[in-house]
Length: 433
Image (cartoon, rainbow, N blue to C red; front, side):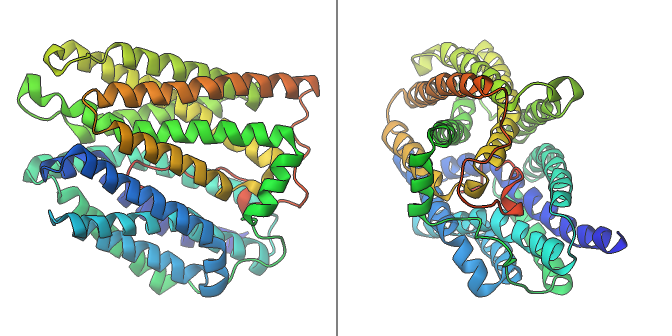
């Protein structure tokens, strides 16, 4: 038991530092590009570059882990993230393009490489039960959620005290250096555990599983719609709040706003794990949370003025409230969706196949709609339509599982689950990918 505690203490501190550093960048990423006077189409292109880089590296992560080992990739994650932060001090579009490529690489490795490093030691080297891994990642998820709230306030104080929008990125780079030092000095190298099939199957095998299992296919489509809508919202909330300059003459506290959003997401996640919610099937929780998210985005759309001439202070008060309500539903539906994927399709846990349509849908919406005059309304209505479709499918999924008598424990894949794919991943911050 003492060995297990030591392994956890070795793993959690640098991982939480990396996640905190990622969260520090989230509130001011769009604001930074806007301060460099890039036009909307350029900002959309930069954001989508990170999404595509993350998708490509995610699809290759399992091969990279087998070839180079987890420790090397964790160090690569911190290195690329640190360099990306420093490049953001340049107003050159080319250097910022490179920065977003590095952001995508870091975002892809921040989950796969770190979690695989711990899973390999937990199972292969220490021979502990795979079920114990869930407790470790539950601690990480809780720490990351609290860290995201803290990061918003830290970013706000750093930017407010210095008056430099890029200063939170410098602080993030310092944290990445600290995390890299801990990893380089305390972690040993290693290859992924070889006791199970790879967590990321080939696209052909994943597709064959989905085509043979209708329930797995429906769950994957729900995942695509939900994650696409979330990616669109992650991009859209900052330019919406930037409109405050038109009525107040200065920016809102983006760090403070981000902290509020993450706090409500944490409230939703805590409710999911609370005793009253434990007796509710995950499929029903997912359907209910999606209904709430649809309502929140509908109210967001309703309070978005059709013209920039009609913006009022009351609009921002309502919008911030609806944003917080939406994040609360995200905090609820994310663990519900992760639980369903772990129980129904454990071999598809990392979702390498679903990453492709998510990236294509979100990037297409951002690139095509953001340069438009009513970009914010168009982006919100697109995310709303995606969530409406996800809601109908979630209700259908709940009815199917209820007809089985609530049996969600029977996997719908042909291979045994790998332990690292069976627990929910840490909720990504807007800066990631």
